[in-house]
Length: 461
Image 1 (cartoon, rainbow, N blue to C red):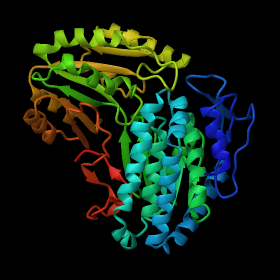
Image 2: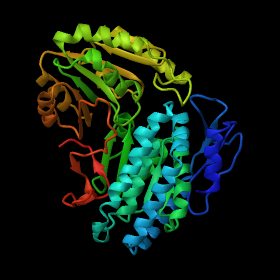
Image 3: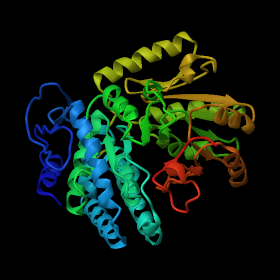
Image 4: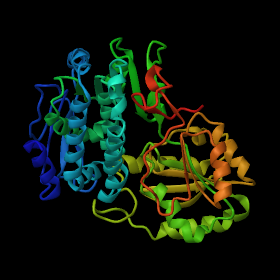
């Protein structure tokens, strides 16, 4: 692995002392340097150690234009790749990730406020699974044709995975790609840039651009040379972008994903498995649930058991802690407190809350708060009379692409089949690290292809 990335990883693993990285648009000749400040940039600190930080320097528009032009030119060289070239490339990527798995997970955990174990389970290992899946489909590689330059806008949660799967699918389908990562996790892009250096890719095929979503994301959406857009993140951000019929899109909104607990489930024994979905993801991941549905007849007893269990959990102090609440930054705590006041003004009941976490119930379904995409660890419990009412909530919304259902096997499967979401998980005890399966393939124009053509899409049927 590149010696610079080794140095970065070792800083976090051994002695995280004032690491400051300047990041900017990255192409063949762009690099990184250490520093303590950067004009026009944003300093991002570790959730756990404020002396560990990196600086994100926004790309100039001309740098972005250059990155797009370079990726388009490099894509023509990729068309001549054969099975051996892509096989060697993927094996190098996979081996580098596996050899540095623990260190990579540590870096990711610092800037996402999660545990190292969580990053291994939900980001690093799933990335290896994606690569292995594509390696198993090499027999179709030479029949693949490019679909045009891809603009990827990725979120801060599970950042290594969210950036990585887009890159490897782009490589498999011989597409150039320009990635705009979230500012808070731009270090994930640095890691990927270093991992890809040994893969003998055409110069400029993969570029990373940094800066505010309102500027960089908007530019990728507008630029005629970017034919495909893959977006993960907040719906509120997406609403500000213009949608053009001249482009193809994949949208992965976070928020409004659900957990359903049926009345035959032993929730007292299984409460840790239920709450792990909320507490570990902390409302940040694309698959984070924000809504919990239970049957009315068990709601009162369920709330008491839920609050009792949440009361025992600590706030995370280190990336090597086992389990606990995300340690929110000061501005996040302030926003959480403001939202708590708004919930209470609408007569919602707080089941459990602290400065880092909020679980409430009884919010009126006509409330604007119920419809908002809240990118914080804020969760809503709703009681329903029958299981089929859960389906109404699941299916009659533009949000939500995953559901986890707890209950007897036959009942959970019936509910899962009727759920109009991209991913259904039944009784995850313990939670399984499954590769994502989609309800349909976006294909960027070729939906009949037997292998996922470019990316999965989680939009509703």
